[in-house]
Length: 83
Image (cartoon, rainbow, N blue to C red; front, side):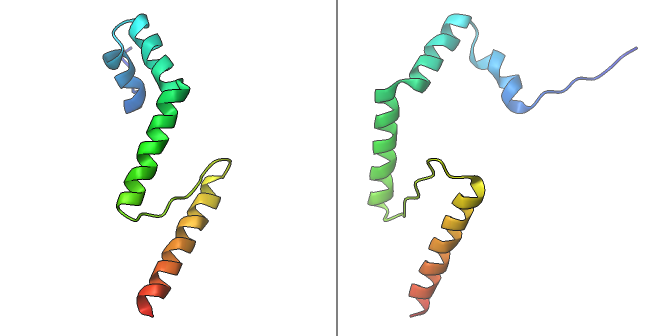
């Protein structure tokens, strides 16, 4: 019997991105490093400020709450544009 198997793209990429367990551990440490995360957040805030993009804090928000906040900002922007 022959069968076909499939994985999501993300799962398929894992072995290609991390050729050894040591590389995976190093990447995971970088991903959770508090200083690296703080620098990434600061860079994101600077980018938004530079382009005058609104920021939405999605901490502890569901996707529905985040979507509602985005729609509220869009509605506000459209009201100001019509004025």
